[in-house]
Image (cartoon, rainbow, N blue to C red):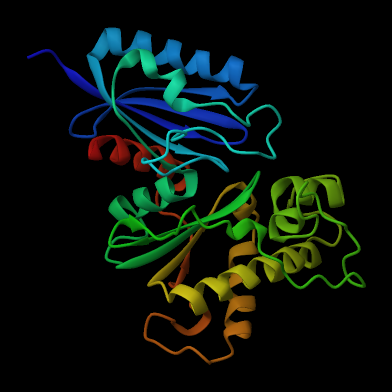
Amino acid sequence: MPNRTIAAVEAGGTKFILALADEAGTLLERSRIDTAAPDVTLPAAVRFFAEASARHGRIVAFGIGSFGPIETDPRSPDYGRFKPNPKPGWAGASFAEAFAGFDAPIVLDTDVNAAALGEWLHGAGQGCETVAYTTVGTGIGSGILRGGEPVGGFAPPETGHIPVPHDRGEDDFDGVCPFHGDCLEGLASGPAIAARWGAQLASGQEGYEQRVGLIARYLASLATTLILLHTPDRLIFGGGVMKAPGLLDALRRETEARVAGYVTHPRLDPGLRTYIAAPDLGDEAGIRGAIALGRRA
């Protein structure tokens, strides 16, 4: 029988990670391309998969974890199509149309759900019934899994756009979200940090601890909301912003203070040092989850 392969895409706001795996999920080949306009990025992805599948075997399924908003309901005729979007030019672009020439089924979910699945299967979410994975980078979003399946309604949760307490006496920054201004993403994402201070968080900056404390307080509003709404077995916080030294520990302290002992459980260890975790897979969580999505097809 000819070799059969799984194509996987982790589509982020700044980069696409493309991978080809065998049916057991073993990685065969991968590539990285910058996220440009869809008429540039999607044809580049098609070329990679066409060339890689010629070397390794016919693609029998696609697994895609993508930034959004994007239609994730497989019953919709617009499945895989981007909705009105803060990423210029991407509204209306479609993975289903781009990859139609491969004649292979597509299983698509949000990038954070894919990363949550990767961590649930292979990383910090192992052994958890319910896990919430949040990425803090170009955007902010959360994937919530229960038993390995995403929790949501008619669309995935948009936790990056929750309103958060904004003390303009302490932080007079208006926010960068084109829809809401000072929602969580508008105040604490990578672009928000760069717009407010002219650079990303980096130790040695003047006022670094105060900057970390401010971002941690905004993110703790989300962490507390996730605990109160979903009582997950673990919160995982990843993404480029979370690599800032001291931010994860500050987030733990701020979240514990906000919960204030109201929710008690052995999972919520003192200091939340195991409850709020960094991703074990690091930057590999998303593509590992996308491969798993493709295998489900």
